[in-house]
Structure formats: C-alpha cells, structure tokens
Length: 123
Image (spheres, rainbow, N blue to C red):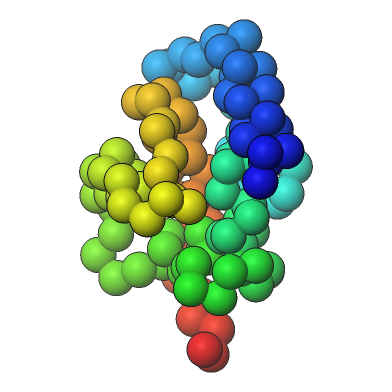
C-alpha cells in the first residue's frame, strides 16, 4: 500500500509540469478510447479498481468501469464533472482529491467511451 501511495504522489507531481489550455489546438485530433489516451495519473489513481477502457473488466468487481459510467442514461459532461468533484469522499480506498483541471481531463476522457451501441456487460 505504501508503494501505491508513492506511485500516486509521483504521478500527481509529474502532472503539475503539464500545461492545460481551455481552447483545443486547431489541429487537435479527437481522443480515441485507447489505453494510450488515458492520462498517466488516471491509470495510477483509478486503474487499481476501475476498468479504464471500453473493452476491459474492472479489477474491483464493485467498481464500475469508465465505459459503464460514461454510458449511464442521462449522463452529460457536466453531470460527470459534478459527480467526480464529490464522488470519492467516502471509503478510505476512494479518498481521492482531484483538482478542477484533473476532473475536467478525466471527464473528457471518460466521455470518449460513450457509444450509441454500448451494451452493458452482464454482471
């Protein structure tokens, strides 16, 4: 568990070196829902419990996959941001503090997993 904490701290401190722009680059390419598109800190923080891509199973069966969340009926980018802003303030293993920029990045990525033909996997 100590190694996990060190890994998360390192990943978070590395994200502080990144710059974010509110405006997309003119030649921006839509993000694909592949493992390469997942921000490193998301893999470090969320990947131990949640499936991060559309074709994966969550390591923790009680944790919904990102695609399951993204394809929830009525979910929008704004409702996802609101959820992520306050969702992890209970059980110790989910006590994660995310800043606004990280929440936006995670929501942006998760919304790439939304699909009109998504089928919820059987439980």
